[in-house]
Length: 296
Picture 1 (cartoon, one colour):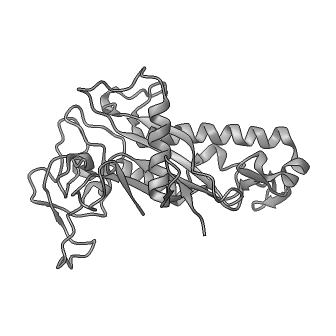
Picture 2 (cartoon, helix red, strand yellow; picture 1 turned 30 degrees about the vertical axis):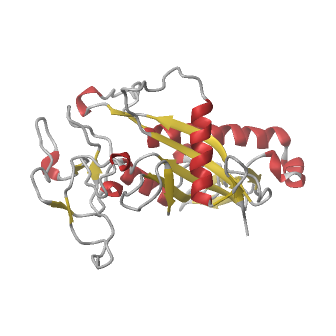
Picture 3 (cartoon, one colour; picture 1 turned 90 degrees about the horizontal axis):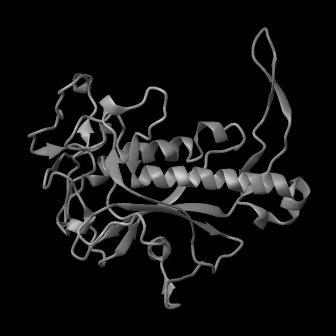
């Protein structure tokens, strides 16, 4: 069994401990770049737990804030402009940088020391062997040589439901027998858990063949309900974006790994999210406490 200590030293559940760690780290940062009292933003963060230190609180390793993304007409063909600045995506970019640093620590320590002292890095060395692949021509390739250390888990916190499928939800009732495949009535244009509305819809735009081209509108615009399980583009009132919704991106990260394509050449197995914690206001869809959290 594991126990986590929240601020004040009281025992805490894992979701609450992750939320507490991320919010505390954000609060400790300087005011530069933070929203003013009349402004709004979304916060996302990644925290780690380690079986080697079961009583330690989650360690925050990446944070991101933001709600903006570039329209498709402003994307840079040379990749010199950041297209997606939603908090979840920026936090994941920061997490990838952290992974690079941890691999650098592993390399600096060397294989023998890393095996003797696992806390050197969140990664551990694997055998670096060579294998022959291919058909008539044999290509000599080196296998990935490190993997996430057993017992290290990655937890994600977001201050509101991610845009896309994760923002399509209804308030729970005692006689609600509706399954996840049933269309959910649209309650508000863009769900914010902080809005205390108890249910929500996503403003993310349905991805269809007809959605391409200038002036295209959301295929779900004006409909009374949205059906979960569809791929969607980022929401927004301005020019249409070509960025996938945060829900879709998080689904991809959990299927292929948070590490990305480049690190996949050295990391043996995908680095996946162990849990996602979403803030829930009092009386909200999950009935959480103000500033509290629900995990899944």
